[in-house]
Length: 483
Image 1: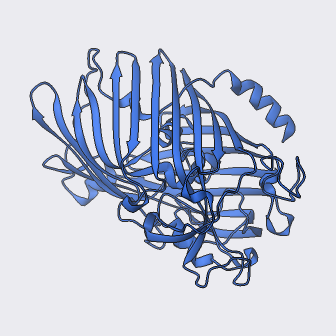
Image 2 (image 1 turned 90 degrees about the vertical axis):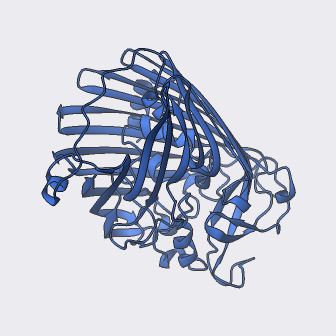
Image 3 (image 1 turned 180 degrees about the vertical axis):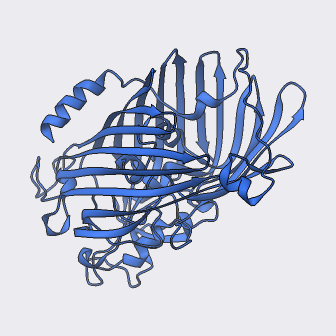
């Protein structure tokens, strides 16, 4: 991977500029484009399956995605019906060698939702809203990373199924649920449970579109959650987006803390970007205070293990990040690049001391572990890739991702000042991943996909992996329906 890393880092560095995603779809003050033809409402069952017709009535649209597949992993954990990803396509600590598994949501999260836009006043004023939940198409359970963790709590890694912390904790609105006002000149202001600007940015600038099966920054929420996945979405957030000519700006601020179902005590993000011919660039800055990162206890007898399996452990930190994003379209090619710098610091308030316990998203209980960083932890994430449209219905995509963690042991008493080994999680370490995927849209609402992701962790980022495993090769194939 060292040669691959050097080539791709050099080729992708020129793409990395500045951040955020879906602002390109916002209304602007420039002359509006000719709107696409309005699709007719589905008139029959055959229309629903064979055409692009929407399920719309009186301005309200029912929509959804069903994504189901199968896969193989050379070092993966067994399927978990609660887990939003189902399995660990990205290498994880509970992995074991050579397993076949059902692989839900490989290309995108299965979901069901409603959305609306209602014109209310002259001058382009509208009321907008959306409510959506994500689920496992095999078990039909709502995405619930915390539920999967509780299921595996106080269990040795060798006996665990797939589980990981998540912003999806079994809530009915585990995706989004918001309402707001939109204007063609003044932008869109919304309130409720919403994606952060970082999540929007990764979805738009990741060559794999935030895929669970082919993108580590899609599978893991650290990149989109300012270091901790629970903050990929804010439960009570005010979000504003507007485009002015070829430029766009955005901001989001969280109102309330854990008591309002959030994964932190506060969250603030700002964005600026623009489109310049075939080039789009964006930049996002983010600050999250008292961010929560949940973990399981390794066994019932481990030091500090709670008396019941329902209680998890929490590392709480104050996190700051900036993200730079770019993509360029040239003929049938799209080129992508991104970079994020994330700094973790010990919390400055009550959570600096172990024992101040919390109730985090989904109502799950966690025991605060107190200060865990002898010096600030820094995680740097880089990615690049390209997509080629073979035809209007067939895309080929390749991508490369790299994580770099510093040594954050500092001058801890009785510990080595610096280390680059698997001995401790605070040692410096790296992660590299490469993926390739083909996506064929063979009907208006259906596509089939197949691909593979290689992921490798080393030194501090490989600490605690059972059986010495540090490489996973995970081919996946699936079928997706979107309506």
